[in-house]
Length: 282
Length: 307
Image 1 (tube, helix red, strand yellow):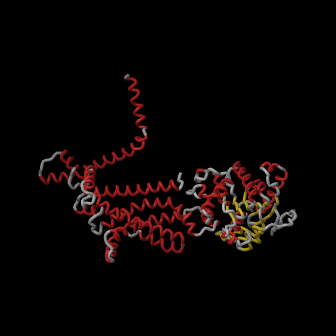
Image 2 (cartoon, each protein chain N blue to C red):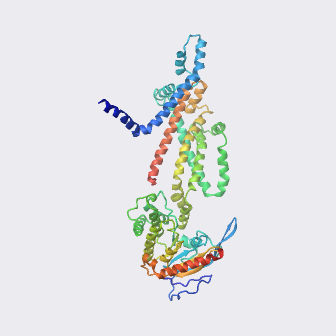
């Protein structure tokens, strides 16, 4: 699935798969992105020379300990934060132009639904803002609610839904305006493991059927390995990429593959990467 | 027969005590009765010397029960007994046609019109100020100190100045009173709405940004609905303050009509009973106004999916 040779500034472990012959369109093209925060305690390097290329249709996970810059990277791509240096193209444009062109849908860790709007109205919110016609809004709200198996909950209000259901609404909302890119920042981090497994399967199925490019931030190794076509392992102080791992399980995989040796091998490599990034701390 | 009725009696008393109406109103009723009892005792104590002195002045023989009776229906008591106030209140509300100058309904309507106009002006002003403060840091720094200062000056000192200045430019009657009332009631609304407009979750604001919403869309689709609970909380404070403002505005101007005018006349002529019944009228008025706002609030909340 990973068709683009990942370019990383930090020379990770050497074994990279051979480059595909027909490179797809790049959805994210980041070159030497650095971001330094000025805090009361001095400068913090949230990102240091991060380079990453993501092709259309990839599912790329960012994994790493807190403070490794994985969320910051996502926010930079979303133009919610500006890098200090480096060049960045999102969907062939600058990050700001991509945001203004509504090229991505963003899913936060919290569903961030608007409590005074019914589920259907929540789904229609971005559509209202983007000026879709009433009929189009209605049709899309129905379509995307059914996509996340929430048909019948249109008139409910957020507090009447469980956390997992609310997060599904927020995913449907991010998809509703058909963006090229889906940015997900620990979307299942606040959910219990059973719900999380279930949503992982649903998300995988969504990705397979819709062919969207997904950037996915997570803390969980099994989640990253199960979902991704590529895993970016990051490390803190300064936030940087230390390994990029290809991970090509069959698209119709089920949760059972988590018991297979291939799966465990990749999980092991991710774990090693995380440990390597941490070693100088001790 | 006797034994069964004996067995029934306590249990039926217990079910009566558990009746929802009793459970709900018994505590309120008890408090009211206790307060009325204390009031009567206080009325006797406070009016005692007054009544006794008048007996002595007229050199009529009197007994303790004569004084007791006197404290209950003195013409100008220090503290009127509750039934005197109730009597005067009902008499001046129902005893005259509503628009007669002696009717309390008429005076209440005069004050109510200034209150409502002032409330609407104050609410609009308060909300506009809050919008300006929320949208501009410069305005926040330059406006907020003045807003707070405005409430430090006693309104009783300001009111005559307002009346005189506005009178000089030809504004008389309702409008100056409404402006004084607006001057008081914009404050809780401005402060409440600044809090309300800034109450959305940072995530919700960032979501709007990811959809590249215009500032106007952020206002109408996020900030405004998020501020609604704050709006009603501050409207409830503001409406009572607005009523107080309207009454206060009637005091230094020598107004001929209005609850304030009644209070003023009552205190000039020592008509304590009239004073108290005007107070009751203002309490009834503000209770009514708050109830109306609460009713609207409940309706709006239902539409906004409150649990």
